[in-house]
Length: 89
Image 1: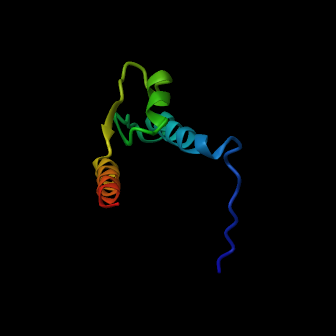
Image 2 (image 1 turned 90 degrees about the vertical axis):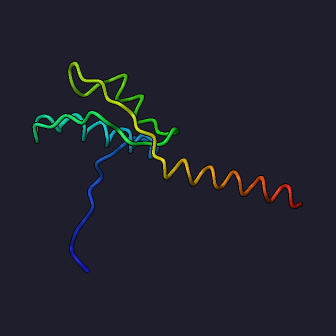
């Protein structure tokens, strides 16, 4: 095995880890890569988009959210399966 050691880089709750990580990626993209992300792909439960909307990483740029259709499709399938199971019983 390798000698890699992970370092702690997040000290808040695990629920806020995704929010802080994505916000950091967006915020430094302009400085590091001269890129502004204008779209965010996420599901309806994601807390990332409200953070990007309320605390925008770029001046005069609105970020658009695109729903993750795979996540939506899986959830819909799961709900339909539950309905089918309840009707069988």
